[in-house]
Length: 148
Image 1: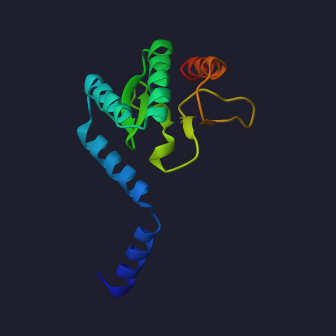
Image 2: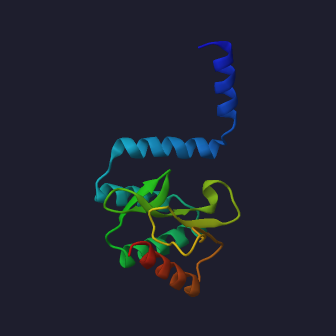
């Protein structure tokens, strides 16, 4: 590797935070594991158990909502976060705890495989500081729509 290549590699590696690097390592591990549904759910529940109490409470409730509303989605981890995939393995929705990247709020998001299209623009990620009954109803409706 030449000096220019080494400098480019060093600059690229400096661009990611420790949390982003850890998430990328988690994703590589997940891809290698190619887990069964049971292994995927076990990994997901382990990640939830490792969360702060506040994030854990939201993640547990979201897990219950998604698995009840969309039992066809397979629980798994995605970049070390709880996620739910369709039969083709495509991530439909995910939960990013606030502690994951030291942000002030958690995120519940949807990937492009989710069928949330509304015109030419629609939201695909939602900030969560807490999870109220109204929030749960909205998320339930979104998950139903995402998998229709």
